[in-house]
Every structure is written in C-alpha cells, then in structure tokens.
Image (cartoon, rainbow, N blue to C red; front, side):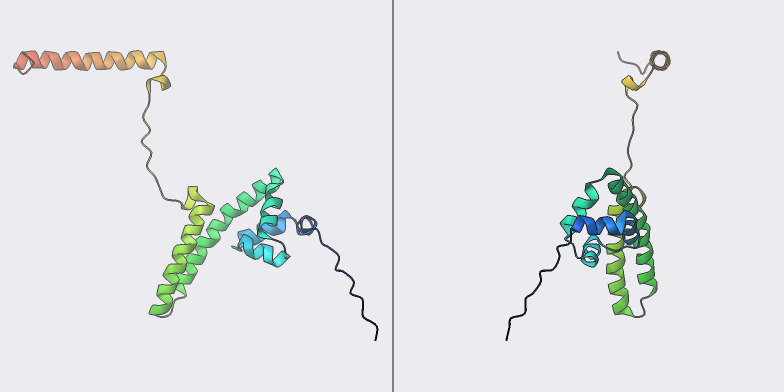
Amino acid sequence: MAAKKLSPKPLVDPAALLDAKGVGWVCDEICAGVSQTAIAKKLKVGVATLSRWIAADVERSARVREARIAAARTFDDQAEQVLKGARNAFQLAKARELASHYRWKASKFSPREFGERIEVDQRTTITDLTDEQINARIAKLTAEGAAVGDAGAAGGTGPA
C-alpha cells in the first residue's frame, strides 16, 4: 500500500487576511463590543498580529481608536440590559458584577465620557495675564489695602 502524500497547507499571510477583511470590519466588531481576542480568534490570527496590524497604519489606528470610543456606549448599554434582564437574586448579583465590568471597560475605552470626573482647580498665574490685567489687579489690591488700613486706623484695630 502506497503512503498517501500530504500536501502542505498553503501558508496564509495574517496581514493579507486582515487586509482582506479590512479595518471597517474590525471597527464594526469593536463597536459591537467584541474583544480583540475574539476578533483575532475569528480570523485565526494572533492577538499580537492583530495589534501590530492596527498600529502599522496611522489611519487604521485612528479608526480603531474611534471605534473603541463608540464601543464604550455599547458597554454602557450592555450594563443596563444585563441589569434589566435579572430575574432573581442570583441573576441580579451576577448582573451587578457584569454591569460593573462593562462600565469599567467603557471608562477605559472612552475616559472623557465614562471615566471618573476629576475637578481641576485652574488658577490663573501671572504669566497668563496681560500687562493691563496685572496693573488693574495691582490697583485693586492697593485700593483694598488702603481701605483696610484706613478702617483699621479709624477703629484703632490696626497694628501698634
């Protein structure tokens, strides 16, 4: 009996496969909330290969970044849906954990929209002011100081 020759599988270039699917398809998957790992598995490529392919082109990177921001809304919606779908205490506990994860994920994909709000105390420094603004501020402070000094002298509460 003759041994059957196995013909080698033709090697598929992962970048060519990704190019064939296109960045639009990848962005649609991301917008739908599909993870990069799941996208890579669907295409039978490595996660690192997918990441390198995205990063290799500035326009592709920008489109994927925008898709992630859009996906944040999907995660927020998923959090709401999973909470609404809970029918008993166990499902509710599980739903809360999932909702928390979805919201966390949304905050990472779109920190401006879903991240923690941080109050920034923005103070004007002297370098931010024009000469006219500085002179006006000096005049105001001088006038306030003179008024305090006059009131203190009249009431005898000023320094001795």
